[in-house]
Length: 512
Image (tube, rainbow, N blue to C red; front, top):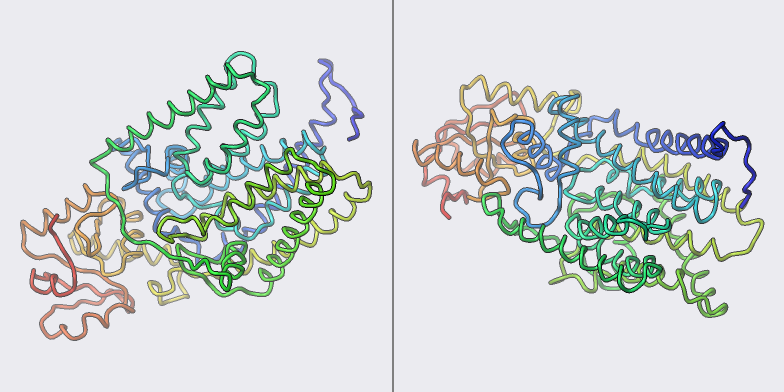
């Protein structure tokens, strides 16, 4: 690594290196924003269901109703960081998609800053720039870098920070205990990320000595236990969702599922067709995965290099085969997200062991190509419309269409509704600002106090209105002769004063 200092300030600080670091980070930030501009300019930029929950949590926090700790309805998914950031977004942008997306992108930018600094400490500025750019070009992060989903981006930030911090001399004072506290929190951000980083916790802190390592381990355990008890005692908000997605893990579908993960073209458990730009990007990335793993195996078996390479390769393979160990076969595409972190770290430690002067030139070409098709993938993913069933008119801004619908519902001087479409329900609950409250078929849901408020209204009045999008109206067609149906524009129907018999027929419950 070239350690020449360009110039120093009066305090003797190497400002040349600092300015280069800042400049390269700004270039990376500009690329991160550029490849997401198609999403920001798309009519498809709306929060998904879980993001709406985070938005509601942030809005409720601003109203002084509840201090956010865990994702509504769960005893996992530590959400405080994301909720506080989204709350700031709501203050700036109101109840909008940008209020959720932009703060999460800032969280992502902070995370990759620590990734950059960690690589810089290992390989120098140029390779830090190139490898960080590869990570930023991965299509799967095109969406997830802006998703508030109860801990994923917080886990990314803490994970990269710990990698950077563990390389520093943190045995003095109590820094190592602060890192141990963050390691305990990592479990509550997402247990799979904790699983990936647990071996690293011991490996990178072995220089502390057995006594301090035991102290640090005790802090990790205590942090996990305290927040676990806090989560289990949050009974007022507790509801365990039953919906699960089962990804097949047989050899015939494994490759297809993994490539879909790399593409980012998935929504909960559902996959979308891949387009040209994304297909090229993920094939290049998959080839890079194979090359790095092959070099890792060469270093292990030919050079007998049993150190960081072995550790990171073990973690990569463990995460890659994670679907085999999934509880009851339940596995989501997004559970592979920590894999991309482990792989980029494996890339770093492999390159650190390779003594090939021309590597930086070859790798530069590879990165430029991947970065270009990462940009093309940004165009592709902006066209992925998860709400196509609920917004039938493409000529209008979907967010404005939602606001118009909410305004029409408020004009009817009613607050409580059932909703025939679960995704539309969460959108209305976020954008409705608690002035329009909706619930789905089940009598308990993530934010139970809201559901019970609707239930109490129904039990008092014995009737309630039901809202739905046009595509689901066919379910009610056989009963329209006995129902009062009002259309809001051409896209939404409102069925007024539905009684208990009809609600029971269509699966709406109000019991425990």
